[in-house]
Image 1 (tube, helix red, strand yellow):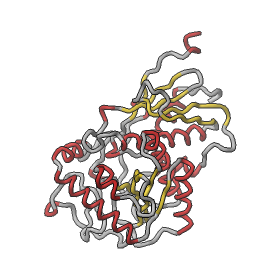
Image 2 (spheres, helix red, strand yellow):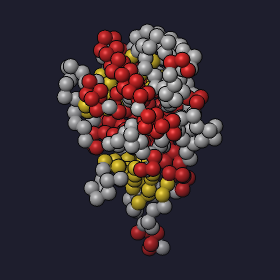
Image 3 (cartoon, helix red, strand yellow):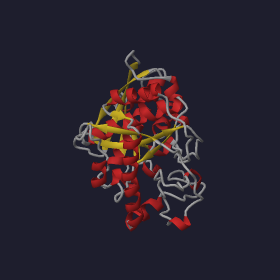
Image 4 (cartoon, one colour):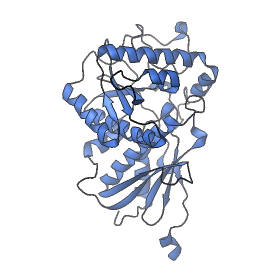
Length: 335
């Protein structure tokens, strides 16, 4: 890229990095548009890929967009440029969630690490059992430090508090089973054909826990007698809670960036991760996820951490399929 304006191949590389971010049920609910001479790469909500029953306020969609923004920042910095990020840049366009301006040469304060950029392509959720092996304290500290500059806080509670969070998650999972509308919505994005480029294929779905220590999501809403072969998960799961001080749309986007920063640091250090968001879909249960030591914080995500198998990859649509045709820039109109 000889100038700040990306060519077609570079643009597709940037968008491909962005869309490697996680999204609820792998719906990939975003569209991208290149605008202006600066240039600016915008991320817009894709309403047709929203989850109106499981995510009625769009909080999970904003988290996914924030994760995509963080990947985009890393990808721009990987090209040696400075990413300038804006959240909700146009009040007149609520579907425009964020933008990254591709500025001049990257400075010393640009968030960039070759290890994190490489982790973009290796990260995916593992819904399989992890080993009964604790995460070292220095690595947990590194994960906490990754969340802080993005405007969020990551805490790793002890076994008793983690067990409480899992009990609330299990209650939410049972509610999901009993809600016909949510079941239909969830099934739309699972059991996808082998050639599907979105949703969660059966190869990426995990088994259920025979001892019910860990409430893994049962996407097909099977009853116990029909469940997949049961396995015993880790005895004392390591659960991290990602929180923000406020609960506005911009906080959701910040939380998404923090979540992705944490996930990539974990991946770079050989940790497996999965996201437990069932309780976050029910306002009453989400409130119960708050820690007694931080009763006014807003929980945005529970992250399971550990060592174990990678799990099956989830598919991604090609980057070019997310790009919208932008209006001609002033430079193009001049020629």
